[in-house]
Image (tube, rainbow, N blue to C red; front, side, top):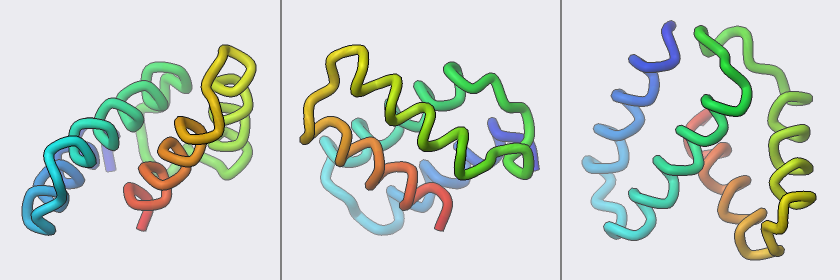
Length: 80
């Protein structure tokens, strides 16, 4: 599945789950950052290592513990 289609479906999922506005916004921003960072086109190309690398780079670039956890929560939610 193309990543843009997956993000669109994920956005609809978040809306249907009635997540808080801040949660939806933060999760979508995180997913879009991950996609821009990794430049994946298909979801099947994403590996656990690419997720770990994304999180580690975010931490190196100044993301604190709370931000890192939000990144992980967003990515877990997206992939489940």
